Image 1 (cartoon, rainbow, N blue to C red):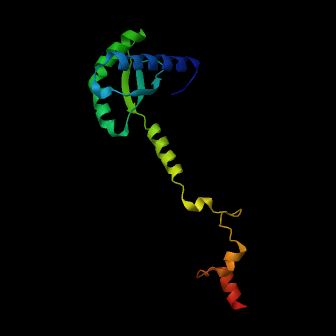
Image 2: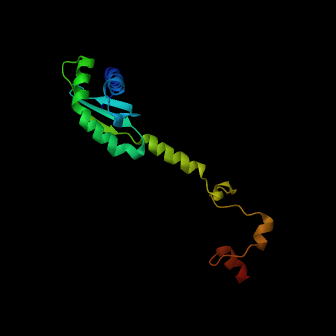
Image 3: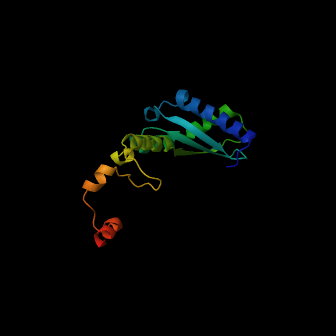
Length: 149
């Protein structure tokens, strides 16, 4: 959705009210440790998409709990916001934190070839002593040229 100063302010207001409702008003244990990461409100304020974050093992559980509590949340949100219209709610699971964690783990497990010195083309640089003693690979053009001499 298009963002301007008014829509950002509206989104932030809706995010704060929705987070307070989930934290203080809804007593569902399946919604414990759920975080509202973002909210997008349509221009006419009739539709609200909320992004929630939770543990990756609890996606289905949290989605089901939000579906069960959607009517109550909408009712409380309508009173809290005081808008002329109460928006339809659409909850989406935000997986960006899981992706960031996966990338972080991948960066921790760096393969040993990353530490090898490379030339400007990305090929490993051989030291002068190792090049003579290392066995030649079949199909290596440098080796084929030396054999032809």
